[in-house]
Image 1 (spheres, rainbow, N blue to C red):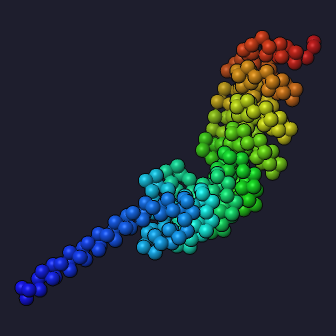
Image 2 (cartoon, helix red, strand yellow; image 1 turned 30 degrees about the vertical axis):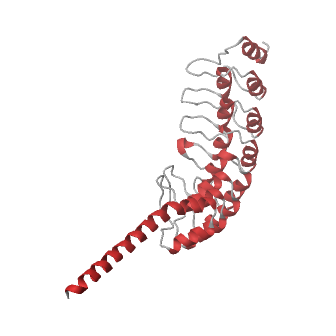
Image 3 (cartoon, rainbow, N blue to C red; image 1 turned 120 degrees about the vertical axis):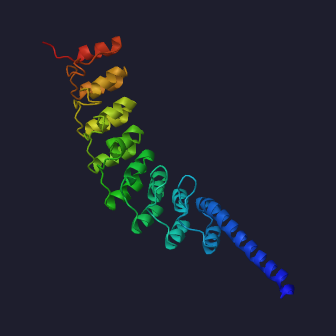
Amino acid sequence: MTAERPRTSRCACLAVGVALLLICALWAGCKSIHRAAREGNVAAVKRMLKLGVDPSKRSWKNSTPLHGAAGGGHLEVVRLLVEQGADVNRRCDTYQTPLHFAAQVGHPEVVTYLLDHGADISRALHETAYQGHVEIARILLEQGADINEKGQGETTPLEVAVSYGQFDLVKFLLTRGAKDDAKRACGATALEVAVERGHVDNVRRLLRGRANVNSQGIDGNGATALHVAASRDDVAIGRILLEHGADPALKCDGWPVRPRSEEFRKLLEQSRPVP
């Protein structure tokens, strides 16, 4: 009996060592599966999944391998992870899902696949509006996305596209019926945002789409797009607004439009009807 104790002890130590190696391998796999997914390394992802690595394992920023694969446009890896049970609606620290990653970067095949496998479509149109991906927007609308959905700060996809100067997407959203008079939390419309950003092309597009040139309420003080143009001393946009019927007499905080430069003052005087 005494002669077998060392052998039993060695076996126990060996078992513990194997267990520790397996734990280390799994821990390393949890880290490296994110990298493999981001890089589209199908073989590496398969290998780690066979080791038992969780396909929905969170990184230190709480993103999952599926976030990385979707953002990288790696459809085969996306498919592999989903088939292994990855959560298509898991949110990371920025509250984005894998669909949001794919929509923002612009990967139509990945977007379509995720939607076909239960991805929540909400706010995906906002995500693609940042980068102006018209094709992604078309797919999302065909799949039932709300073109006038309110996101953070009550912003709509149209306002996001306007804010980021995505001219082609602005045109597309307007042709598909986006409301150009929808107001965000501070009261601004898409037209006022376009003026604030100095985006002349978007100002013209919105006005052609019959945006209300005299809409008031930005920041709750009654400002119109013309007030914004005057505060920026943007004569070019001020002229466009006046040509489309902007009223300089409308008041913001009790004051009509107040020009900051002589050039803007002359512009306002020229626009006044002759008595």
